[in-house]
Image (cartoon, rainbow, N blue to C red):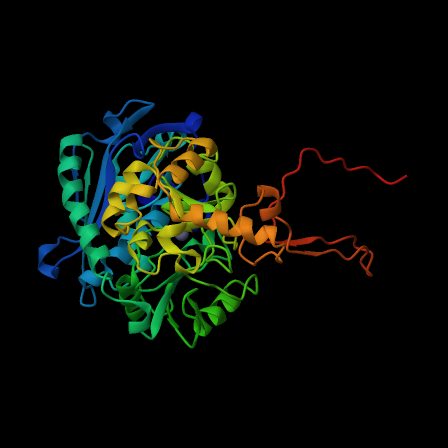
Length: 465
Ligand code: ZN
């Protein structure tokens, strides 16, 4: 069946990147528009395998072009229900990455694709080939899908029109978990989809915490685990509550230990500093500790400038991802801002000291009224100095914390467990270094750094005389 395609299809190509120089055309992404959407419909509404294109095809696009792209799939089957839409939709990412010469990043309204020059040279000249290959993978990998069709849109006006409808669907999905909380359920869901590139990452999805990619909520996890319990989304028995505020549960810890191969064995779902949730790489937002003001800033994928710490989203994303517990950076899905448990172990919104304007606007309905005007955006604070000034002028709650800490320091009390205002260097102190100086079997020295961030100016390796 694969012979009909001029490209290979294999999970082997998942990590393949199409860099600017190798790229024939860029689709959707931060400089254009696009989205992906899956809808569940009735069996008789679909002609299985049908593809419709609205707008110009690949063959009509010039080299180096940037074009909008929307991908809408409709699915049907006896077991197919609307609850499965988000889960199926999320798989478009891995399936399209199986296609040699096609790169797919992100999800929902953030999708970003590139087609390589090589793929075009080999004969990929139509979206129909991509859609047919994707539909084949959907049906092969998710057997509950009995029928599927696809509509791709490359016409900008049409993409805009359909995008606004899709946004309503995404919002309605997010809204479902608003009145459901961790204390109301006995089961959470895990997602291991991102282990392909972050091998020790497990996304723990609870009613109060959406997946980091923002695409899978508790209901989605439940639907997926029901239809395919051996699949990448599975049930996690909540177990005993160990730390209610931090969000630590015995069931989550057990699964963390087994699925990370012992990399970590405790997770506090609502803590930034203590046993934080791991970050895969596809998170919508990165939280970053700003030691100079002892607060936490947040930056999203759409923000192209630099945060007050002088870093961009992509630089910080690089430090955050990979499936480790990193103290100082935390990846989250946007909907987590709407949770009443949002980093509650660290003071919740009272600890937030910076957020890009657009993102702030998106979640403004869930920022407590007494703090909303005290949190600066890029328009109020562009560096550490203007940040400090703004926080002081507005009497942000963090300012009181500074005073308390100064007092505490004056009394020479022992340092508390939570990092106070300290230098970046001390924040990233190495908590544990295992360093056997020589191995008994003569194989050399093994260094294990846990929770460490190391920057090295220069390394000199010399052969012993
Ligand atoms: Zn992920």
